[in-house]
Length: 333
Image (cartoon, rainbow, N blue to C red; front, side):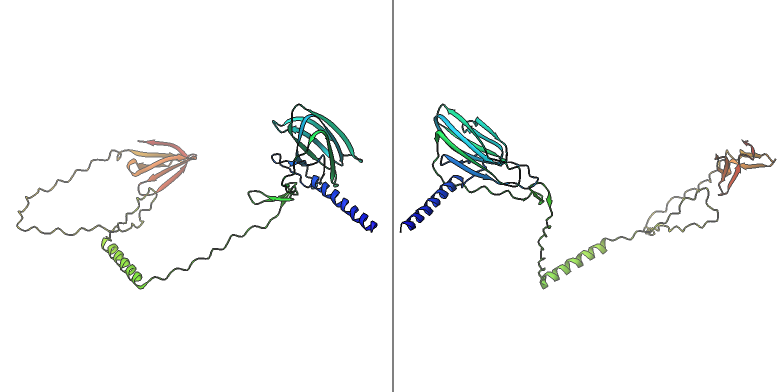
């Protein structure tokens, strides 16, 4: 019976110790505005390693009170590289700072803080393990340390997500590598069937179409087509056929009844043709072989020299070209 009682008491003591340890480590807040309250004079915790290539630090915040006097702080860390800071909540005034480095064995350090008045203090633990093994820390308080009352426990810190989505829908991991994702297919819209028109609506539409067709036929006016021949250029052939011109015919005027006879108009005198002033002026081209070419200037449209060639264009469409190497003189007489 004594052995059974001793065994039961031993198991109960182990359970109570584990419960107290879990109370001191159950909540680790990473939000400065909502720190985890420290309810005992000893605080323990674990910092897990992040993904390979992720250089971010893990940060936890805790809160406790201090009375007038000295507060003793003892810190023991293992496999942790980072900082342990204590601030005054009012104004976030830094009170002390401890820098720890990962080593083969555990590291132990301590600090002493003197308070002139009771204050609420903020403990920040910030760091990371250098390898894949997790880091641990244990902090003991003494002196004028005051533990806070246990409140509703804050949920454990959410594990670091290995992937996230930005506004554009691109998924990346904690390092920043883009993860392929399948594009979302847009929902298929089903077209609603058109409602059949009633007999009255069809008859009304037919009447409206007939009325519009009659209006178009009534307002349509046939215009005579006039084909105008292009103005023949100087190089056009004389025997080129001209396009026929369709004359615009006007309806005959209605005879006037009992109208007075108009007075006789004397016939107009034919206008006398004015003599052409260019009829007596000639273009004379004298070649080096002795030949002389003469043309009336009134029969010539244009003569010019381009690239060493004398070109003469006549009104009848003929074009004559002479090399300037063979021309001795060009005169207008």
